[in-house]
Structures are given as structure tokens and as C-alpha cells.
Image 1 (cartoon, rainbow, N blue to C red):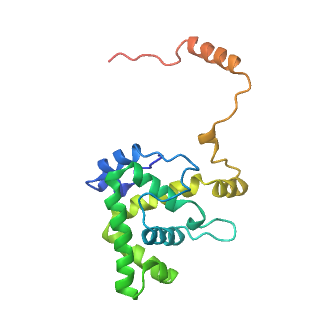
Image 2: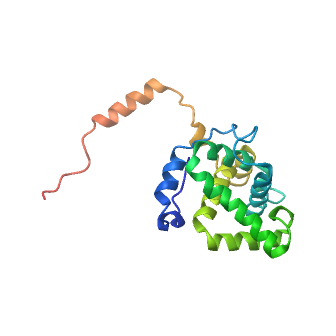
Length: 192
């Protein structure tokens, strides 16, 4: 998992636990689809609405609900059991706060009300909010639909670092590397 160690995690007491768990929870692209293992249907719907609000999309960009966010988070939680309570409680808190403030669950409120609920949650629980935000961004930007839009708009192929590039002549590449390694150093040592 390509986790960015944002400032919210660096400041939080639980940063090490979160990063350690995420580091062991790699979800293979394409495996996000399928039956849910951890999330129940209500929480899955709350997470989908969260993704739609966090990444609303437009005519060119897919929204957060167009990528397999729910399946990705579910698979991550299946691999990172210590993060389950953080995510499940976050989804419950967002849904409960929407019910208390708007009289309807998070999935049933307007976009503006969802933004207000997520703003409240970010302020009250930055660690859980950042965890879900990072998971959403990760699955979003590795999705093939989004990668295609990035390539069309910027010329940058987001899949290249993941998929790599073909080497024309591997034998010649090794020869060149050996040649470079045998060159004298261009750095001189300075006495201490």
C-alpha cells in the first residue's frame, strides 16, 4: 500500500499502529470486487455515500462511488483486523450524526448535509477521517477509469510505476550498468 504518512498520522498517537497495519494489508487491484467480508449493507452504503461526497466527480472524472471503494476498504479490513473498529466506528458515527442533525441517515441526506457531517467528523476524529480519506484516494487513483482520465488530460501514465516498462535489450542494459559501476568515482573524500 502506498501510504503517504500525512501530517494527521504523524501527530496521532496511533500513527505507528495504523501504518503497521496498512503496511501488511495489500489489496491486489481487481480483487476489490466480490462479496463483502466485513462491512454489512448499511455500512457499505454509508461508505459509498462517503466516497461520492469526498470525490464527487464531474463530466470527465469518475466519482468515488464509480470505483470499488467499498470492496477495497472491506478487503483491507479483512487483512488489517486492528483497523476494523476504527473504520466501523467511523461509519457508525457519521451515520448517527447525520440522523441527529438532519433527521435522516447519511445515505439519505443532501450533498451539502453530507459535507457538513464529514467536516464535523474530520474535526472530531482526524485519525479515522484521514484513514478513510487515504484509502479512498488510493483506490481512486489506481482505478483504470481514473488512470485513463489522468493520461488523457496530463499525458502522465499512472500505471507505469505499477506495471513497469518493457526493456528492449536486457543484456545490453546489464552491460551498461556494469560499465557505469566500473567507472572511477566522481566524488572525492574529504578528510575529517
